[in-house]
Image (tube, rainbow over all chains, first blue to last red):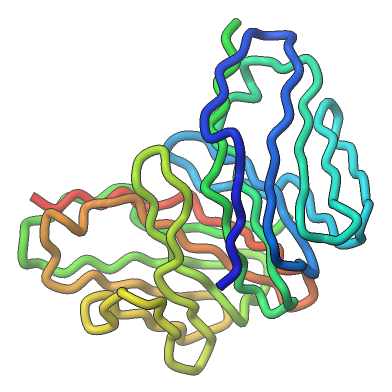
Length: 111
Length: 116
């Protein structure tokens, strides 16, 4: 069974601060996704990383896939209240669709 | 982007009744759909994998006779919670997978089920 450990579980910061969320596993993934979910809604796909060492940027969000494709990180620069939500990482060892989800990081950005 | 709808968004029912939740991929064909259950401030718990035209694959601990899944077309999957009880109250979310994607899942907006 593949496990994805996500940390921290909860994060409360002030607007303008930077933060990093980590997603770690002992398993190798063929791809890894990051999603963001707001209360009462479904998760929304932010990014997919597939190549070891890959770095992708989405405005103030920077996603990195580990060289061994076992871990990933999400870094947010100058966080804003609109970044508040549950961040989920998900990894899969094949492209058949089924993914393993991390436990999630609940981020609160205070104005 | 790929759009997935889910209906109803909220449902309140009496204990012992059955509730059907629909999940539709609106602008793409989904050979595989997933059904999740989510508890407050927790991650997604996969219940079952639904493949078009075949029986669903249930995760360990999920009762197949209680949570009936039908995936009759490439754009529609349904989850029926049979003989619902208060402990079935939860947030149910479906997702659809595009064959050509890297395991990217596109989620519906979720259904809040409350069983009285």
